[in-house]
Length: 175
Image 1 (cartoon, rainbow, N blue to C red):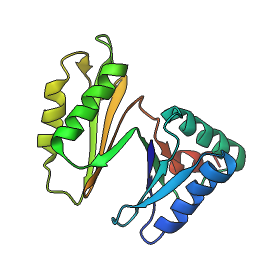
Image 2 (cartoon, rainbow, N blue to C red):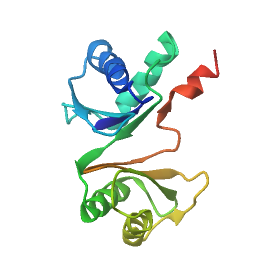
Image 3 (cartoon, rainbow, N blue to C red):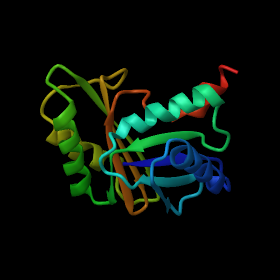
Image 4 (spheres, helix red, strand yellow):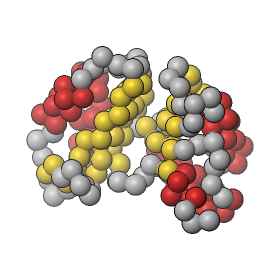
């Protein structure tokens, strides 16, 4: 499991340090920072494969609720798989995760964000959607989001409930 951390340009290091502190020092998980080489983005990977992916997200939310919002992190997106960018790998990882979580009765949508890549959005979305033959596509308020993040030569994917991603702006409104 990894986390894609969005921040202001030139604040990538601060955002990475902030989340690193919460996950490593407060929650006591082992992590490894990765460089994304894209302004405003950082990656942090959990070392322990046994940890349930979204358990950490819940604990980060609890930390924010108790201690206030993170300052440098704008958005924290959990990624269940992180791998070299390849359309076939994206499709296979998506299929594997959807198969485990989405039933015939569920609705789903593909959410794609890509940065500094030659892959076309339509090509990626079509490849993934063509392989998923169950459930119903629902672009607004689906049961599950198939979240695909492409950052240059790295891709990350998660199948999650909407609003699983942590947005600092949601917490700032409460203050």
